[in-house]
Image (cartoon, rainbow, N blue to C red; front, side):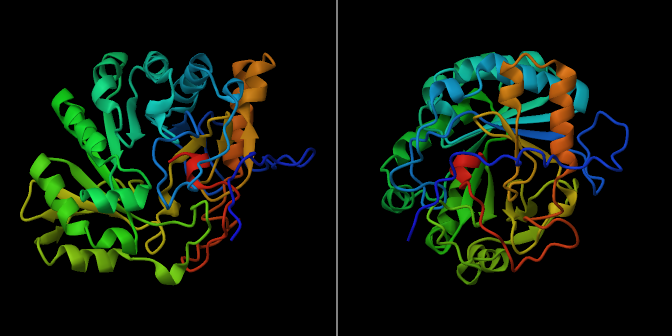
Length: 359
């Protein structure tokens, strides 16, 4: 089976810029369906220290040239624009694996200086976090989401193609000790992870972490995802219910993708992000920047707008803002559909895999 690596990025064809007809006169990143983006995800690298089967091919992604990555100063400028002009309140750094980017501390510092009042977090596999957590905290990082699919060493190595579980657990402990609360653990829900789900929840409860399971989406580089092989939220809850009492909680924020359950009367909770079977696209408030500096309005939409070229050609903030606003105005309703209600049974594969897009 051919592997789709997702690089180079896709950009709108020349002369076919999205229409802005009907767009209200506002600085906000509004789309045609009235949604406003307040959550910015920034990929800082395509490189990773693991090779998770649902994210990257075994050989990794083709390297992006160092000069093609956004610099810390460029990232800071775009974050300042997002926070001060667009009203973005949440900034998350992703990858690849952000900790392998040599300038990650400088990037965090640039983001904090640009948006002092925003929530600033990072999604990481936690390898090396024990060595960098102090510097990241001092630079302004608020919290971390740690990807962890199993607490069984052999099982972890099978899923990630790397025997690195001890390093990940050192990172988890370091995050907890540093007070990066709440420490959230993310596990991708697949048949391979279901068998260790109860042990993973027991670990999260014992260490005071917030665990969230995410239904697998068709963003794997090998394109082996199939709807009929999915593990649904219902199947997971039945499995967890063998060891734990789960009570559903009210979702306070409709834009939050996680549905949560109280575990054994609390205080710990477990969440399920049912991206496929319980779509939350109607309340999506995200905008994304790839490591090469393109705006991706929708996780499943292949259209991207190149801000790096504008940055490096001397464009002012008004030009950058206009390009970003136009990109978000063209955001589809859901999962590659231009309008109408999403079909949870149908997903068109993207040209980029999750590792190339950023989480």
